Amino acid sequence: MMAGKADVKKVVLAYSGGLDTSVIIPWLKENYGCEVIAFCANLGQTNDELTGLEEKAIASGASKVYLEDLRLEFLTEYVFPTVQAGAVYERKYLLGTSMARPLIAKRQVEIAEMEGADAVAHGATGKGNDQVRFELTYQALNPKLRVIAPWREWEIRGREDAIAYAAAHNVPVAATLKSIYSRDENFWHLSHEGGPLENPWNEPEAEMFQLTVSPESAPDEPEYLTVDFDGGVPVRINNVAMGPIALMNKLNEAAARHGIGRVDLVENRLVGMKSRGVYETPGGTILLAAHQGLEEICLDRETLHFKQIVGLHYADLVYNGRWFTPLREALDAFVRSTEQTLTGAVRLKLYKGNIIMAGRKSPYSLYREDYATFGEEDVYNQEDAVGFIKLFGLPLKVRALLNMERGGHTGEETTDYSKFKRD
Image 1 (cartoon, rainbow, N blue to C red):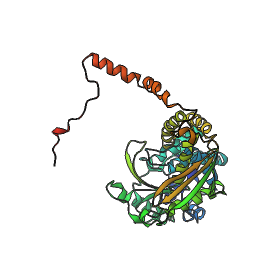
Image 2 (image 1 turned 60 degrees about the vertical axis):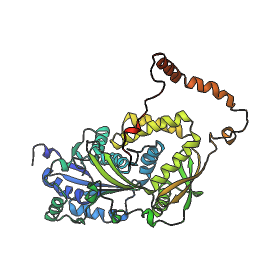
Image 3 (image 1 turned 30 degrees about the vertical axis):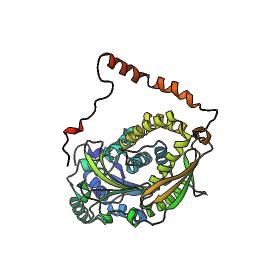
Image 4 (image 1 turned 45 degrees about the vertical axis):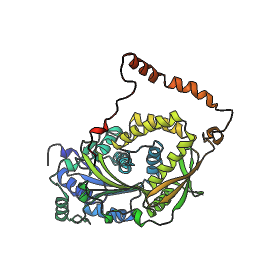
């Protein structure tokens, strides 16, 4: 045992029941000589992942297992605020894994404090983003806890090594060498990485997708769906009041039927390399579209445009694991203020992978048909536009006049297309 490892008496492990975290339990006991407590968060992953999880952890050597249902907290305290902020990473990724990690790590720290543990451990690799998300949360909430990241210490270098280690230590795992994809699932999404996806020229295999049907196989008839919001929070689907969990189930089912929510992205990881991920975010894609539809009629131009800037920063913040920061709290305060008038309904048409806006209404709508028409009315006099345009274009006018005085061009340079070869 290496020096310093003897100081760890008890560790709380973020445990999923998969291959990596299953072999981490005996590895921690073997290399640190410590008691291992496994903690798994139910964030809406399929029952197959959770069934028998406690028995598996105990059989792998854990002294105790915490399996906690955090679905409601995940949706209300992490997912909904991120949707309200309009946070989308690199124009596509709806941050399903990124939002989940700070919640898991937060509860892990709480359990470590309750159990009197010296350390916390996670199964994130040294190449990915999750190690940062876990460990920034540990630092923010209890920096006195020691952090153990086996992938940065052990000699296991791949799936084959992990399977061999599990077999040698009688660890019950279902993984085989044929399992080529690395996946993460919760209520919000299912991610796919690895295998054929590592070549960005390869189209994802049809068999890889697990939540959504292909758009080609979706129904030939569109489905209309109405989402009602109260202060930016979704509360009804098709005029039926629902809690967050039931509501997300309903949205996921509807979107999955119509092949909605598939994203293929080569993203920039925080650690500096590019990585390809394919995501299925069915219900989340609908929810984001509906929320944005309501913003269109309820927010004034300056607020909406600034909120779009905030959304970019919020997405980076979440992706980079900086959830428990003063900046996130400050951005949330701004976002909450913009949500006060986001009460209303949005009607969407779902059809073969597409979400088509079919209608939106709100008692706080800033849209007035009588103001927007071309007819005569009292609010807007079209003759006023003359002075407005002159003042709005004054810098352009001054620039053009100065250029003319210097004998320069009055307009921008144009491309000479005559030099290009014609077929």
